Every structure is written in structure tokens, then in C-alpha cells.
Image (cartoon, rainbow, N blue to C red; front, side, top):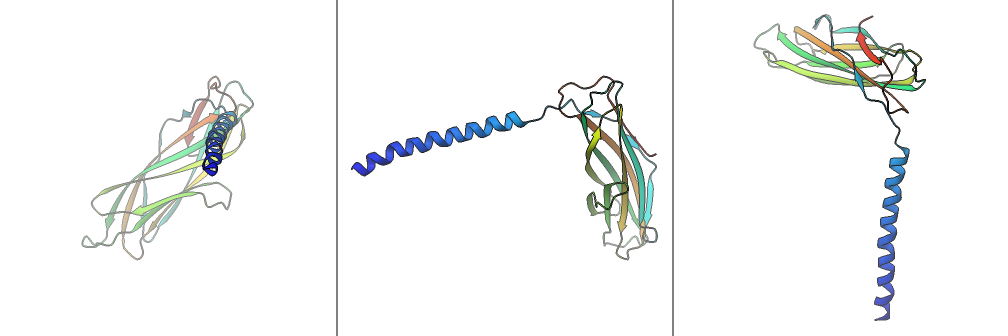
Length: 194
């Protein structure tokens, strides 16, 4: 019986110690969270449709995204780019049942970094949606302008299947300022081809 009485206080002590540890962890997460301004998005940019074939399966589209303000808060900016696709596959042989794969990749221009990618099969007679999203490097301190140059790489992986892939695409960007909860005056984001 004395053994049981000894373990009950230890059990209660462990219970309260675990609650205290959980409380400290929660407080530390809140304390280390960075303030950020409201995210501002660009107007959607719809580029010219592209055509990929088994003979010409790749194309690279340069994109530039800018965040500007009339008055600098002298803070770092974080940004993200999203490209949405509508894909239409037309096989040379209408009886073809195999599906080629469309691959899209966003990467920082001028680097060997592979970037973010997404891919999926495309089906004849159906509009296939797909998107790719990339967080842009956080190396831009907002003076009055931040700029990110990216390459949008499109590829048709036809595996010997003859046909044409029509690619419609729209890109949007968004950005916010780190270490401030207020959005700078006239903070705007634009995205386009150079």
C-alpha cells in the first residue's frame, strides 16, 4: 500500500509538468511568430497560348514579378507565384489511347536550382487543368522595388506519341512585407513577361 501512495503524487506531478511544458511551447511559438503585412496580389497575367508537339516538346517563358511602394519600410519581402494551366491534347491518331504527360516548372532565372514543378497526364477530348506554385527567394529588401526573374519551363513528355498540346496559362503573384503588420502605402505587385 505505501507503494501506491508514493506513485499518486508523482503521477500528479508528471501531469502538471507536462501541462507546463505544453504551455511553455505554445507561448514560445506565439512569441517567435513574425508579424507580416497583408498579402497583396497582382492582377492575373494571361500570356499567349503555347503549342507543344512531339517534334517541339519544350518552351521556356521568362516572367518578371515586381513589388513596389512609394515609401520604403526597409523590410524584407516574401513573394509567391502561381501559374494555372488549361491543357488541350489532340493526338495525331484519333484512336490513340495512350496519354502523354505535361510538365511545368518554375525556377529562378540564371540558377541551376531545379525549382518547383508539377506534372500530369493529358487526355484527348478533355480540358485538363494543372497548376504550379513557387515561393520566391526572400533576398529582397524593399527599397522602393523588389524584382524576381523566373523561368516558366513547359514540356510535353509524349513518349513517342504524335500530337499537339495547346497550353493556355495565367500567372498571378502575391507578396507581403515581413516584420511589420501594416501594409506599406501604395504597395503593389505586378507580374508579366519582360
